[in-house]
Length: 332
Ligand code: MRU
Image (cartoon, rainbow, N blue to C red):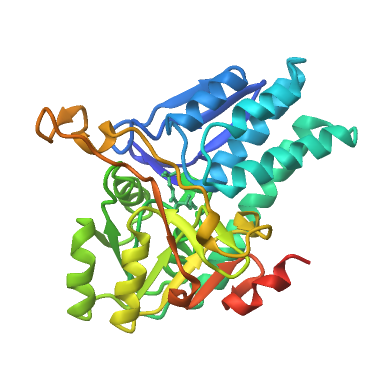
């Protein structure tokens, strides 16, 4: 992804591996500081995923493949590394897909580092393809709403929901992005940071403002990412996605989900049984370390919700834009 550092623009990935260290942009420090986190072993990688140093389903998967490759190079117990990494975050399908891929590669006698790099290159290419396919859906002067951060930070490079937006911009279309702030962890600020680095026009809005702008006919299209998509197209994504989808339908606004095929869980018939991560209540009770709720207040903090497929206009994948009935075809 393009990152402006002083007067220069550099190309940086969200996650990579160097001399057996898993390196990543520390997303806890953004948008104010660009710092990097060095994971020296799989426990550090697990810490980074659990504590959202790195976040976004495909980036979590990329971290995990590197974590397993690192464990293999350090002659650690791979099964244990896989177990620890799988326990970090339950909802993102990419995490489990990535770890199972690595276990298979190692079992087949393939070089773990090489397999990890192959996985990440493939992911980056998939996101680029999502950008090419999805970019065609965006017309000149479109105003697009996105929720959370499904950008390069969340996918190593390009993004899923942000990839079509990037490609529309590269193709000189005039576009504008509405960025949901995304309580409680404010991933919208990460999206704003990515868009500023690319000079893409946008405004951050509070989550509950989206309906207001939809009704005023100021949103032409919604694109979001996904953490896990069931066979029938129901999908889990950042909490608040469901209400955006319902509002989009009510206001006749096309609603797209952008995701690589690694996010599809073909073992799931529908979204009912997707495990929803419940995070610490302090993420709701505090903002940037400052308590905003009364001392004795308690909170609930589900990190994701499930949106039924009936609200989705199409799924933007590396294989093209699909309707929910076409998902089964992907399995092959
Ligand atoms: O809790 P997070 O920040 O990891 O949640 C991220 C999302 O919900 C993204 O929309 C999803 O992982 C897709 S990222 C391309």
